[in-house]
Image 1 (cartoon, rainbow, N blue to C red):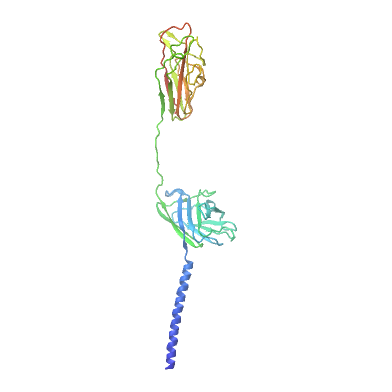
Image 2 (image 1 turned 120 degrees about the vertical axis):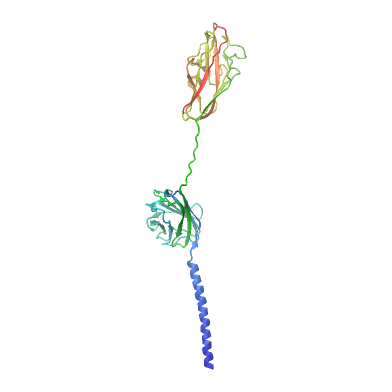
Length: 364
């Protein structure tokens, strides 16, 4: 009886020991798998310069790494799915930057393979592998760093791009030995461009005010051989604007002042007002002798030289003559036309008048 009891007791002890061992094994296994599990990358994105199918494109890949990549030999891999054509893209077409802020303040030097100071960057088939420098004191990507990988012409010195696959959703996989992983979906479409067009019509505008102008002497009344006549209170303005690439030309054409068979001499050459001498002329300036006119305002137009001198006037009769112009498209320039008339002691009496035609021509 005593021997049988001892045998049964020893069996119970063995069963307890086995149960304890199983618990320890399960806990150890659970701890092992927890340590080996990769962390998830966050804030992942891939911005393409074009999402058009079968078209060469830049890639700007961003992510935040909870673990970092700070050990010699650590690798970060980016796998492009089948359909993306890597072509001749190599480390010279890739930039790697990282940092604690969105500025990615550290930009790593890349080489074909990792060395003491450079991260290695190379494509094998569809996989880009970035490898930590062989010198442990260089190139660390710390935990929670924001990482940016630029591929293509957006990289410094880049001259090759990755060609997009056919239309659809394609998933890039980020992995490697650095301990974190994640995926990014990119949309490739048949055509990512919209052609927007509009037609802007050519235009030129001429606005003329005061279609009737009376010339009187200072203080009112008709001019005489001692008093110049001018447009005291009837300002005739010409406002011109255009979108013509070469601007516009403003011309005039008309006869001198006539009354029946009589006429007043036009000022064929530019000159000052002179009482007692027959004169008919105009300019586009603010004059003192006589006191009439206003300088041009607005836009980029300007009077022709014969009409752009204060107190000097000219009128070319019966000939189309350039009065003002602009050399490029311009907003509105407003010109005020000053007219003067002088008569001699023998100038025939009568009602003198003329009709002057102004034409603005766009230089398209």
